[in-house]
Image (cartoon, rainbow, N blue to C red):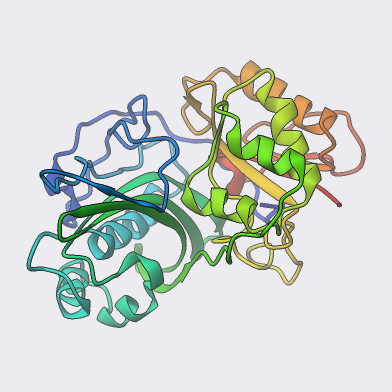
Length: 332
């Protein structure tokens, strides 16, 4: 995402505390991110096709929890807990009414269930794993948290893999964050034909795409320059993408300036070579090198947790929103 008008705040110290699966309740302790960030190894490229499962068992998932290194971790926690509550259920707990009860248990408006889109289905059972939660924007009293997730649903004896990205809008009052609205990703149908660069990016194992981002590329609505830059970076790095086109605010958060993301002209990376951008233990040199290589790959607008010198006007930027990812934007 492009620059928000908020200066970066230095992150507090990192603290790791393991959280049990009961953590979907409001008790929100901080937990360190493991090698898969969310705490659970999940397939890097689930497909939307059905696959028979003899036991109809869904994958094991764990709650995603922010660390104290985050900017406003309480906002991310609130957003993620809601998505986890709506998007996963046990047998006999399907449907909007049951989802409403889970949302009410979080102290949030049950009307949010009606905005859940693909998170809620007619499946007998569902499991949801949050891959990452990054900011679409963070101001003093409002925030956009982009919750990137994979979801598995069981229909009788068949398990299907999918997932989405949800733009969760929050507001702060009295020191607490509440959720005001949900905006799930709408990638659109797959295109009949794709540019060679896009097909290559979809097939490259060093470019890890969550469900909504992969669907964005398959839709044909992403500029080839974006795919070309992904491929160039993948020759040096293993990049884990969070957001491409859908599931992102239409405007730069807090402004009326259109974002490059919905126009298919940007992508965000939350982890580089297995190291989360938000993690204070991640090498700053690695992030700086990645940002400069992104600019060399054609990006006019590279943002991240480090403010770099050089480049053209506004080529590099840093703010609170980009403390947790690297934004790579293009003019065409």
